[in-house]
View 1 (spheres, helix red, strand yellow):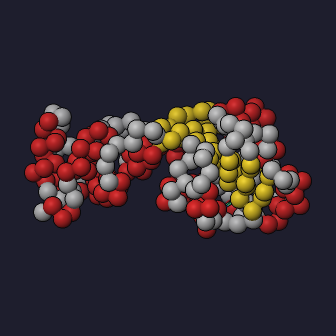
View 2 (view 1 turned 135 degrees about the vertical axis):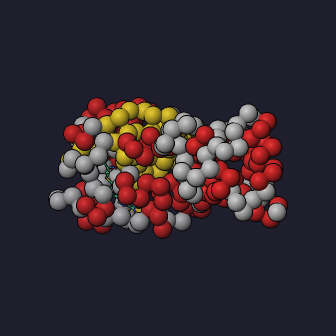
View 3 (view 1 turned 120 degrees about the vertical axis):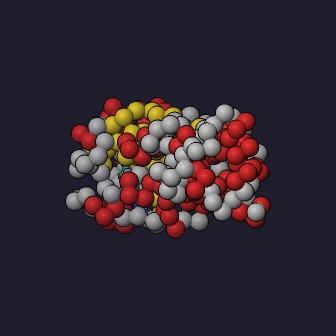
Length: 258
Ligand code: SAM
């Protein structure tokens, strides 16, 4: 069957990397596993052996004849766009593990959907484009460090599992890939996440500008005080501000504090 570009179909064919993904999963026999985009079932057939139940979302109904063989009382395949899936039905599940070799053009919307639906997965093992992984894992003072790096870090501890060459797929994608592991962060900072998200978005809105310019709608005196307490120059740009400082800033300012 011809791979469909519009669905980001690059099927994993190298067993070494399939094993690396499966071995990275810390799943208990009581856990629910959700797979995003099973494709030809390269991961599905291995995930079936783990967890209590496996639910896989596949947007391409033409893959039904291939995926049918994996369905049983433990494994359900739902033919639906994952971005429209109502995940609230899983809120009662104690531990959820999400696995996906994601269609790269919707990596961020998929992660945002999972966060917004508040199902709070214990762990997510995801294959993403290498540049995207570099952004998720970025450290302060690097050009990859940005709004989504910090937003994601509020929810998850993120680690690189393995880089994957294009030759591990059929058809071969034009980009290199990376498997990352996102583990539920148990000690989340004590802040209003909506406010934090807004502050981060504003701070990184124009990366070349100083933080002061990007936060022009906020109470700058309060921000200045915090920067001074961390010995950070008030002319700093957002990429020079560590996570703990952003958390302090989000605690004390909002747009109404003017
Ligand atoms: N997991 C398989 C593997 O590793 O070989 C397939 C990976 S392929 C990169 C991505 C898969 O996600 C394809 O099967 C594609 O049809 C499916 N897909 C694309 N967009 C989707 C969406 N919005 N919801 C669910 N599945 C999607």
